[in-house]
Length: 416
Length: 162
View 1: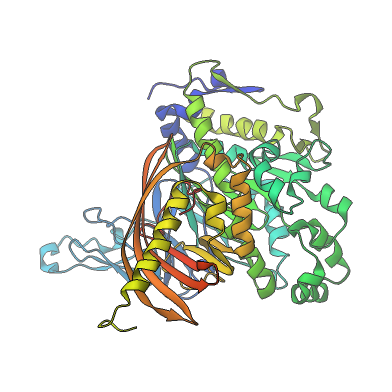
View 2: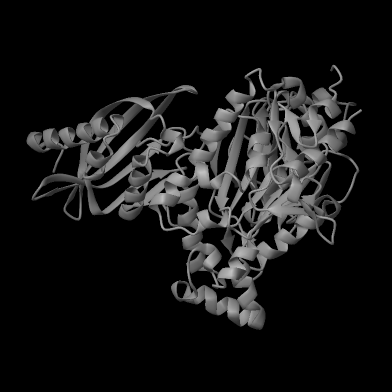
């Protein structure tokens, strides 16, 4: 691979278009980001019982997330240790073993090789102990969110998450039982665009008034105002590539419990009563502040009522997976969360179809030869450094995008 | 209705409605398409083999008021995923009366849609089930379900009326 001069492509106020279009950049990203850092894989609630499994991924790599017969969650790679056939061909199910269809090698759902047919052919060549399914080298969880890393060693998940870890606390406490469940299944939305177009857009507060003006103009929604020039919401670089649109200042100004969700306590009486019973005096601020809008680098977007997972396949081919947040112990809330999510996201979503059209237009534009650069300058003059060292700005400022690129550059330069 | 005694007149009326609905969608005649729906309508495009859109994600699950919002959004001309609108040509075949449900006629059909956008040609294929009702002003749609053959795979943007 020819050396890529990252310092010439990534400047404080602009990035070069080739970062979105050059296959060599994509290959380097696979090695230095996707197969090294912590990547979100799945949630333990997707494999609730022993022997459950579900197909997941780390970038283009297919991962089988299993709960083995002992109840331990594992991340197995979908490749037979014999001749590389795929041992699992279905999306989800329950299985104590995975049997390769090619020559019948059989693996336990903890990955170990149980046996192979006609075993006299392996007499004296016994290697069962070393021929299990490969596992993702490291796995850690936070509030049931399972992350994997292909790096044998490195920082812990909490070190990787840094300030973004708090987003998982904020999300989980919206459940009266303190637990998120991902039980609604996933939509998969394919876009002919580079994965970073999605990553940057998730906390870009400048686009909603333009990309989503059509839906804001016909549906009763307070979303548009959150991203207006007059909004007091903030954009924030949480560090380590994690970014946030902090909408709490706006929600606090409005001061309506569940206003963040476009509703009121009267319309969700069971949920509100349970939350007030569990949280007491703290319930007011929890119900006013609402859910985080945080992009966890590189692939998990906690989008208030939805979760998006970004999966890159090629420099201009990305799939966005999306599901509704479901909160344990909150059936009335969950019905609304699901129907609102279905309306908003996925291939036909009233919001996301338009975002996706932007990604593809951006990608086509990035191939145009001039002016070569994408500009990241918005709000540079009014970017603040907060007491904890985080940078923030007006919600429409490009503080998050600059933060993403700072971290990206540090990862790519540390490539070797 | 029995297999031995197909009501040919009813079949023709149902076919005409289904073909009209297909043409209105292809031509982006949003007002005409919206007028086909009853007040209790459900427009559903499942994301998998699920039978329960109240607990599982769907690609589209619109009640009448969300159908209205979807149409109003398209009518703004600023629904970017349909600005410009896709060029569409769909074929609806295998139309079959499947029975009745609470007085409504249930019909099935297969659909194949060719969509042209700057991205290129996209082929959409699926099994449709219509719930149709005859009223004073003619036939209306109380329900349409489209089960895409690739519903469980990664799909491109589907912002036109399927």
